[in-house]
Image (tube, rainbow, N blue to C red):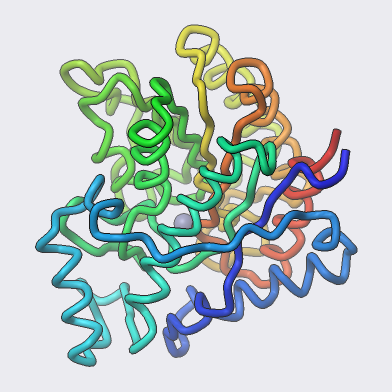
Length: 314
Ligand SMILES: [Zn+2]
């Protein structure tokens, strides 16, 4: 089926310059070149990102933090937290366009322009907290998208599947007390940022709506598939999401320098298939996938290609 899958991309995402940092503009160049080389891009619908406003980013972050990020960037600061979140002159514009890219993807899906959409955006988002940058992340793109689809389109139950190799502490924190957004994460453990044990299951009204599946070094495709099929599919039979997001980090790839979880491009295709099946069963296929990590350029490019072939398949 053609023209059912969208892609969000802008050259402005390359203006978030990070020097010799692993989270570099070359990641997006590798992804887009790979999609051209494999003949995948021509079948995707381009969805243009629009910068998110303070009201939209403010669904997840404090107004004072949003202003602080803008001021720090305008002032020429180069580091936003203890050391690993690097910024440059173009970083604020890139960051609000990354969040706005997810919002544009949500709108394209909800308005029937596409069935699902991949957001090739940066900086990534899932470590970003209410009032703090962390782990290469400025604003929590997926969390903003989840709140947006609820507020703008009246969606009640949202699933976020986070298969980035690191635990998405920022996303978990955003929805920890909330029963309307189910957060599922697989991640290498113990590993950065340290959170994501099985005992972290939500609190108050949100108890039972956070599901962490920490995995050991070397887990690989089959173990991931088992966890997805047993834990996630089972949990969704009860939750029945109306909209699905993927925090799509590809840093669990076996070539990735930041992990040793040993996934393959084909493994990411199979995980995509499981999540797409959940979206199809409960959410009319409505799914937005958002790039998080992935630092080996060949592994990243291959994995995104496999991911998109499944998303755009019939
Ligand atoms: Zn990661």
